[in-house]
Length: 438
Ligand SMILES: O=P(O)(O)OC[C@@]1(O)O[C@H](CO)[C@@H](O)[C@@H]1O
Ligand SMILES: [Mn+2]
Image 1 (tube, rainbow, N blue to C red):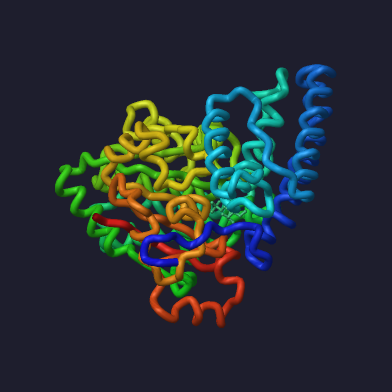
Image 2 (cartoon, rainbow, N blue to C red):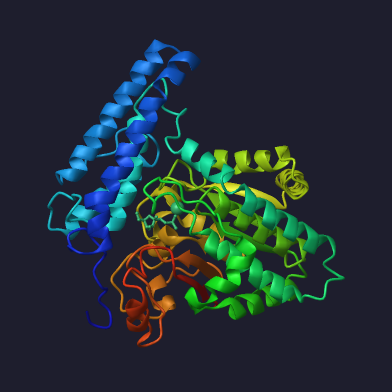
């Protein structure tokens, strides 16, 4: 690779990589779990609707079982045919991928891992969308996401009560605001460990106290640009007299979303910004990613809670959505296979929207992979270089490592961590707080 050429995209064609293990073993497990979940819905659907709907559900299961067969036997990619608006974009992307492999058919164990994994989740939704009766009524991951929220209640109560206490006496407490910010930034960072894709859909909730774990996990942060982030937010507060806009590109529902809402509330309540824009997924994605429904359901659960902190924030956050200080957006781009440096050309309006932001947090591993175009970069490559010009605003990624690509490390750092834990890149045990501040 010379100074201009790019390292190759991660792919299941490279045996021994996490992409290979994912396509060979993990994706079939996730597809099997989806079929099991939908089959268990059969009697509920028959009661809720009728036998015709139950039959339609069986057809959906059949299509997803066929998809699993195609993954396992490395069949070529087939077009998205559910007539949704993004199908055209997927088709253009497919044609471009074909040219990259001299006209050969993109397939599971040859094409880029990022493309194939995003394509799988889109094909799951195509299988559902093709059902005329159930096409927009089913989120195959809903039960798992809601279960994840319910089993993280202790942690959710802990952060809700702690944040409420701090915010109600912000002027009096001795703790400098920076300390509180750093604490809630790192609670949001480690909230990313609660991801149902890495666990193949198995329970993966926050069981330990998130407040206590911040200090314990400090040594596992491999790159920590927290101070630059803090300084930038202070500068934004001054330059915009507290009327700046923060954007958070969300990742997982459940406890991770709770931590994102808390971070947003801290920055708004303490006057750093006056507007927060949350970006959710337009369809169920990577098992636990936040959809519009998940976001609203989470706030409803907060409102309905008998915990004082949760109900306080549930009511406050619903009023923020009403008064516009919080807004919730979806765009099809976040559920396309594109890396983020392709955004400006692919969806210029979204890029222009992000340029209006004063600061953008990107949550999680899939967003990190798309920020850095999911390539086998040298570990010491600068984060900015891997953005390849994706710089709509000052930004920061809060990511626990769950995929074998990471950049911005010091010389020798990767080798040192590898000796400590040979799975350091794929279990979510290590993390990065990496900022691009122009
Ligand atoms: O984006 P998230 O929720 O932090 O992680 C997504 C993920 O679980 O899915 C992919 C592997 O299947 C990896 O990017 C990562 O492990
Ligand atoms: Mn996710």
